Length: 512
Image (cartoon, rainbow, N blue to C red):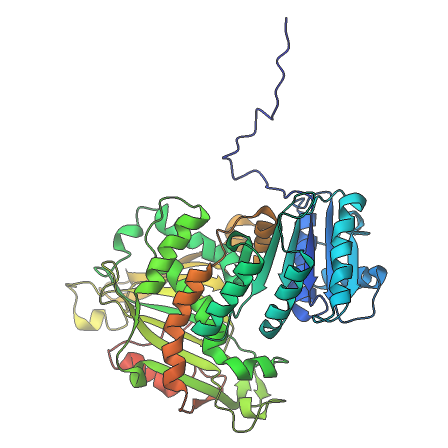
């Protein structure tokens, strides 16, 4: 009896996304590897991926920074960073598989010799680790340094996918991508010239969060939500990204940018695009980006920006029971600064689904607590056969998607209070990811780093999305250019102007 030989695993269906996807042997080159992002997010995420068995056997981290370090010193720093900030439990056997796979190249971004050494280091991995040229370059550096590093990568040929021996070359750039529409276009042109457009990954870590990705499932896999996800039933939508912290050590960067450029232009508008987009034909990267781009290009600011574009700046106050100083008293902040630490905007989306539905966006620092959520607030029932006193505490139905913390979904609706009368009151039903699935969600950087190494661009905005987002924010910045932000006490929910924006139409901010 003959034996049938299989050239592939007969139990593995290429379309089965439940099976882990593991990248080819590759290197992750991190510029600015001594900074907080690398220590607190990137290196711990790499350890977590290794702990979950999602990294190839041949994987190397190459660090580049202005430090007089050797490979051993870098590896020890990485070990401490992973131990302190990893999401998954520490296991020595996991680290043992990573040990010896750390390389460090010291130098400045304008140092040709250092980049020549980096090129040689990456090339040597072909022999030492069997890596055939696959490398992703992560820009954990200030945006002003992007052009210098990009030009060095082009000069040395490290950005070229056609280098001898094959392999892919990709680049990962952190937000903010540019400081306005013009500078973003220039940077897009430069990065697409150095790398190919398909090899550029513009990272927005919010898109790597499980709760954000679950919006697709919530809307398009359930018959109960999509039919009412439109202007026939929705009164308005609120998107909140609140932080209870101040600016920390980011004074220089933050004072040059402010809340709108730092958060509104990327995180918040991306959340809006995903919440408002039409159903894509499939879930390939290009199909999702096409629908998101339609939303971003359909955004229209209100004609009266004075009433619908509010910005504020935190003053002295109390947060979490502790006294905190105002923005103008922070270290390295000019006492005459007019940079906003809070921004709230009303806008509309000019398409059939959302015609007439206002979207209210707000983001700020030194607010009462840290929370990011999307609240879909539905219209009141057209007729309620109850006495007014029975429904006096009844509000609008709401569906709230909590992105962070306590990731989950809550539905608020009216119910009868037990008793002989017909008193109605709002109640909430919801689920939390941690409770329902009995495991913690992966960190956003775990998913995004893995996607970069796999070449999956589904969760990464492209140049056109960046341009469309700046087209929304630039007119706001232009309007605010000669104004001063309204002060608000730290520990409150922002300036009074933001409350008046909703009160003028009989609405109010949801208590997050």
